[in-house]
Length: 533
Image 1 (cartoon, helix red, strand yellow):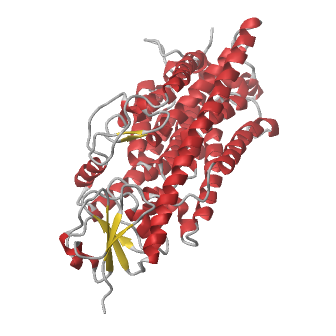
Image 2 (cartoon, helix red, strand yellow; image 1 turned 60 degrees about the vertical axis):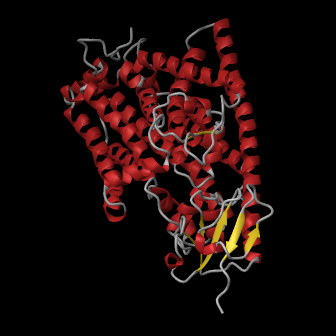
Image 3 (cartoon, rainbow, N blue to C red; image 1 turned 90 degrees about the vertical axis):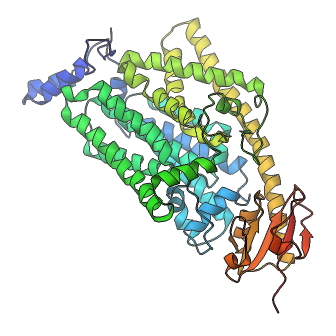
């Protein structure tokens, strides 16, 4: 029977073995040292055996390095680095650069512009930006995997990285200037540092600082994700009640999380007062930008393999489920995550074993509220579930013997192989669509250049925004304003109004020369202000 806790009623969470180790550490002398280093016997947990190995042994660290390197190589091979920046990317890229900043929305956070500032301050090259993002994505995945080392074999940690990095959405989003991949990396690393400290029964000063840093990083990328993930970790600290045995552990973990949230969310609150009239007004504006709030627990499941769902006008969604045959693999992924909780509880107790799944469900619940849902928002969910799925595969391929072990190894290999094959097909389809959309966008930019659109200029649209308007403004060196109602708002700059679908422009532009942009979708027409003599 394992000496790790099971969180049964009336039983403390604190492992007896760790308590004995703490008692031994307070008693000087060679006997205490021997007691602390004595193997706990045949029933010792495998996490302790993994922790006994050198932390940065060459053979062990090679597993996460290989997983991160394979992920980075896949991004370079299968992602197009020349795809132009789209709407959201143009907004983030323009904030800390020599370009005219695009309008900043209430739903955005400042972490991503800070992350890419070393590139955007020096160049506007989209290839340089995407190469930088790919390299940083691989480094980020490696660092997140490091947070889980020490209590499970290194190849299991690497397997979790492969399961998450093999998903089409992770590979697609890693090279894009969007925050969800980075909030997944921050959440994965933060939960790993938290769980490792709880399992060890102590937190080093370095571990506490790193935990606070991951909380700040995640909050700067996506404040809502940080609240969902690390708020639940605070609740777990309260439920586990480690202060009964080590008050310093509880104080260190809770303090790191609270301090990290205070810094990351504090920046968001300060910006709310400066630019949006306060946090409540900003939350209302962010809710309106995402289509409001309406609980729907199935929407995100429908688009796991791609597509969008929406009930907001102007943002049509798919009907039914995207790629139904792939639901079998996603179901296997979920089942493995649950099996991983069962497998890990044998060594770490139910609460810590289920911590990744609890945090993943918290993020899923958060993104079951927006009416307009997008697959990329769920990346923190998949990153955390990948850890439990890897634990399940480890348990399945090592616990049984004989033919059962062979069958488990075959099933696990098939799970990973099917993932890599099917997810690559989804990635290829998605990238093909992105390439086509990028070609349309850049054709519109070239057409407007031929019409003589040059800075200083302002691009705008009617009440229904044309998707290419803001990215075109970015590439033309213009500024962007949504639905200008009078020329006075342009401040003397030349105005271009883009409309689609036969819509009419604002009254001040109805008699301007109309130019159809032939290579765009949706019958886009540009009304260009005549040059002043």
